[in-house]
Image (cartoon, rainbow, N blue to C red; front, side, top):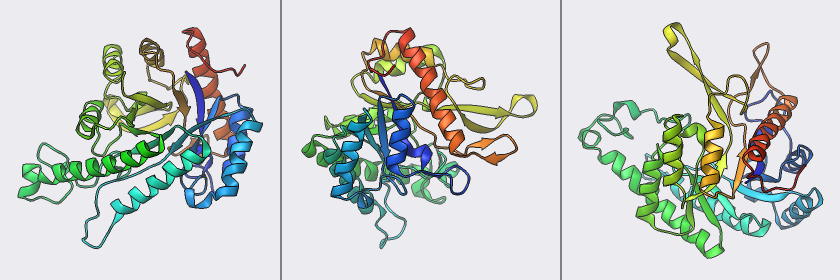
Length: 328
């Protein structure tokens, strides 16, 4: 296994105003910290395909060689559910976007494009709680009670994933669909989706903090089920904040191995080794970064978190003799 830095943390999405870098400088940080690879977040202000013309892409390939980095994944946030109006076409736009990301990955030499099935925001669309057994995608109706709205959304996503998978197959690129709500709320649903599409270039990204449980046996069982599908993994940690009587009231992203980290990383790494997983473990920072004094963090905060994540995870990879990179 090798360690990658997903440059999303440097996009300014979750830090104080003005605290961001361009793509090239973020790639240099990955090399400076001793990562093996850097993954390109394919959105503005970082790696949106329309902003990376042919000349800039060539220079980017040269930069990776200059700083001794492997080309990681091209990482996309996508939502393949159709719009709620007959004249809205978000699904078509997402398909076009992913097609351009596949083309960019091919030109840059990236083997993987990470995608999501659907994404309303923080894990749940606004109508989910009004469903009857399944998450709702419409307001209360007979269709919702029968689950037809959910089934329709599933089929919309499946059709889109099947289409972009064909583009990826034609280009020799692997799509890694991340198990992530909406639609693919757990790994069982993800495997079902892959079976229905049945394209060898559609695989899975499995993230430890998005598993349904941190129980050791559950982690091992999930990884065994994912053995033939898993090609990618992000390494963030999520910690619950609790109130009276231990009731959870919020969560926050923390650095792997930090005092508040509840994730079972050693079990995860051992399971990956048993699977002979040889892909990337890619560090990302994709939630609000709040620091002492209740302020949004700065680039210094992002640097520290990426560096601490690399140190902790590289230590585990060495401990279990499964680090395949060459960075000291």
